[in-house]
Amino acid sequence: MVLELTDIGSRQDKKAFQNYSRAEFLSLQFMTLARKHYKEQVKLDFYADKLAVSIKYISETVKSVTGKTAKEILGELRISHARLLLSTSDLDVAQIAYKLSYDSPASFSKFFKQTEGVSPKEYRKSHYA
Image (tube, rainbow, N blue to C red):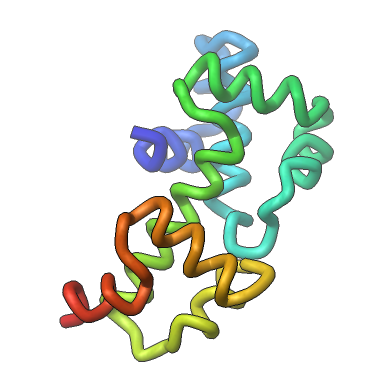
């Protein structure tokens, strides 16, 4: 659902947003920015600054509209891209980690395993085409 909303947000013009509440509009703006920048911008202060709101406000607003925090949405986008890269590319785990702005391959592997239940290498073995 979150990825669908970001697609909708990126295809709409500002006039179409007039029917949305402020919270919905802010959430769509966040998701549009997140989809564009999630690979290189993982800190919420970047998004809060772009949208001229506080980190707390963006987090609470996005959660109230989507049921997920802004941080969770960024994590989902990054993991989704990681799954794609693991199953379709020859990039090693370290290259994928750095491509998605993780601090280290270890932190990427830890987050991936927590999210997916398997390590990136195990995921690749079972999904690589």
